[in-house]
Image (tube, rainbow, N blue to C red; front, side, top):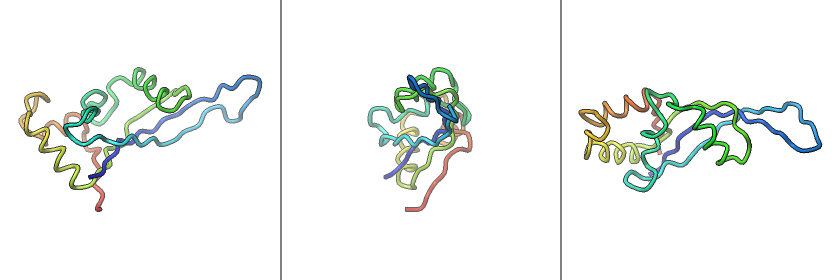
Length: 122
């Protein structure tokens, strides 16, 4: 199983005693998705709503910790996954759909990820 949350971020360099041009840079950040049931696997539930970051300023602070530079903008791109991970993801949600205020995994995935799930063939 293989999956990652993909974010687009813009970060700023603020070095002492030197100037940079440009001062800000854009990049794509891929955060490995823990296997369903493992600690941190519900990242989608904490940070996303309908495929968008639900608290972008707070997420920028977390992304700044990940990268070690000040993040000035961030957006969610997609959950990039293979079929095995997505099946396990759905099964874990279907085991407890009420926790997501949804009837089933399809509804929960749509609520949190919107249409931002990209399945790659292994």
